[in-house]
Each structure stands twice: as structure tokens, then as C-alpha cells.
Image 1 (cartoon, rainbow, N blue to C red):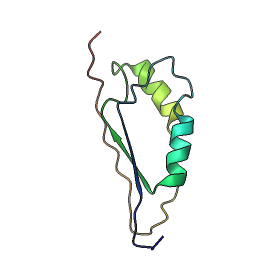
Image 2 (cartoon, rainbow, N blue to C red; image 1 turned 90 degrees about the vertical axis):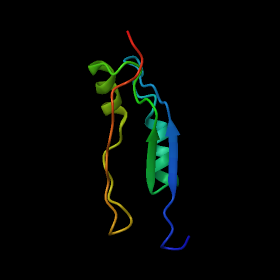
Image 3 (cartoon, rainbow, N blue to C red; image 1 turned 135 degrees about the vertical axis):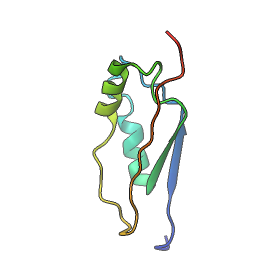
Amino acid sequence: MPSDTIRFAAVGDLHCTKDGKGSLRGLFAQAAEAADALLLCGDLTDYGLPEEAQVWSRNWPPPRRCRRSRCSATTTSSRGTRRR
């Protein structure tokens, strides 16, 4: 691939639950191999509960060095939209 090409992977509405132990690791590993950047759209958790955020953070892979020297990482998130 030419060096000026940036590959994106995009997923949406993952809805990580407090019982979802390790269920997203495979997805993140595949995205890391296939793309330079991962776009996460929609709801990351079901209800925005602290327990769901803890499971999410355990699934989220450690940062890796970007292949392109001028790129940077930005993370933006919000609480889930479902009501208890």
C-alpha cells in the first residue's frame, strides 16, 4: 500500500455490558491488524454504568505506536443512552 494511505476500521453500537468479559478483544485485535485507525460510533455501553466502563477498559487494547510519524490519537466518549 502507498505510504500516504490511511486505513480505517469502523464499528458501531458495541453495547459493552458488565458481563462482557473479554468479548471485544478479538474485534480490537482484528482492527489493529487491518487498519491504521479505529472509529467507534454509537453506544459503547448499554447504560453508561461504572461497571460497564470497567469491562470496556479491560477490553480496550493498550495504545500502540502509530505507523505514521505525524498522526495522533484522540478519544471522545459519552455515556450510554438507555435508561434503567
